Length: 383
Image 1 (spheres, rainbow, N blue to C red):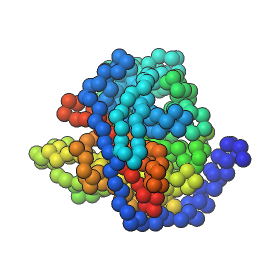
Image 2 (cartoon, rainbow, N blue to C red):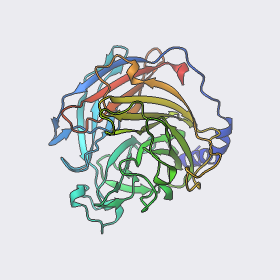
Image 3 (cartoon, rainbow, N blue to C red):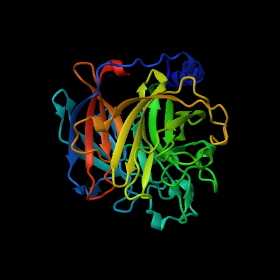
Image 4 (cartoon, rainbow, N blue to C red):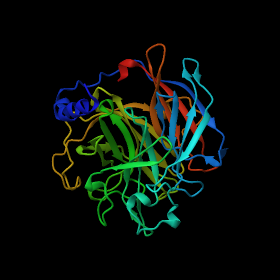
């Protein structure tokens, strides 16, 4: 079957698959830690400072990993890195960076920092806030998300873009109208498009916003969670469906009271390319005076309400969100620290049949945080 025929078949079958796909069975063996590596802080590499690594994706063509950096061209031009390291029964090996390229605008120039943004330019020429990057399984190109901007300085829509392997611009994929930065609706600042993954053997692109849209109700707090949105679209552009994701409440109260505390979806990863209803969702939380909590959930969109045409989840009746179950809480592993982990990818399968799940943290270019690589072993019966 041709790729376009496969895409059409899977896209057409999504509603049927949502009803027919079997639910994941509860596992018995726990996930286990394979290993972790800490990259030196402010590591210089090819004229850039390594840090702000917001996503990671395994590239089967090279056996390396692609990582996006969330530097908004403030330190160096907005960019991505490639790196290599071993993941096997012996553990997680040292991380070696192998390349870096800037993400480029349609005219071939790097994206400007926010302070130099020109709001008169087309949206794909304005400043970006990079968050997740995936390797296209069909072409080897990169597809990446960015959060846009909602501030007094600018209002820029989030986007999903495609780039060549050298970072040059290819195209923008359409996003749902409800995820655009309207005056009183759309994503909140820094809670916009973040998670991104291919599904259906590359025929589908799924994405997630980090927090609830303005029209969907308040952010999660210590007493209640929130509803954010997950979108599924064809790799060729058309948006097919959208689902409500129930976020957990903030796990602790900040110290001092009233200080910053947040939770949100930082990464999205397809579980099985043959089943476009199942994903892993990473919920990343930070509470001042307490620290980070990173939890990974398996979700299933089967039977969930399609909310693509639902204007507001705050006002909607009888919306059924996706089903979710906890797969891992990083607090349960013997890690040196649990930092601001934001990215995840499937790594190589281990000799005993377990799947490796590789994570990376965003150190926010802070001397008090770390760039942390983590590898977990996921028993086959858990997913």
